[in-house]
Image 1 (cartoon, helix red, strand yellow):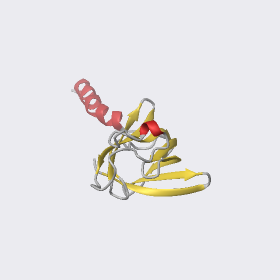
Image 2: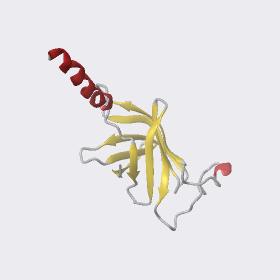
Image 3: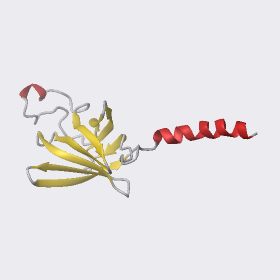
Image 4: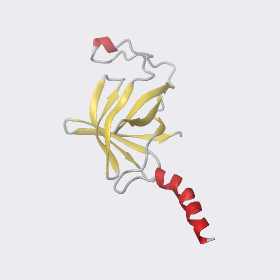
Length: 141
């Protein structure tokens, strides 16, 4: 009987262990997030060893459908849906660091960090030089 319990216990514990973060790693932020201004949904996922996010849906019917404010003229005609807005984030303790956040409204990119808050929101902080702004995104799924 005892020999039968170990494989069963191992079988049931593996799926839970596979989802648990490694020691010192933040919890997963993969999924869909509603931006703080409620104008877009961003899908966050793994991109190799990094975390990235792309615009999945535009909720504001008056918003441009193309990346018209991009500083690179060649990218101004690309659709906003699918545009990368979070790139190159690396997990570090309780947050993701060393990434860039792109704001299609201004056409600017910012040094950024991401942190999952206790209330389930995602704290997105972008900095230009020493001036930083924080936004809170809401998880949809």
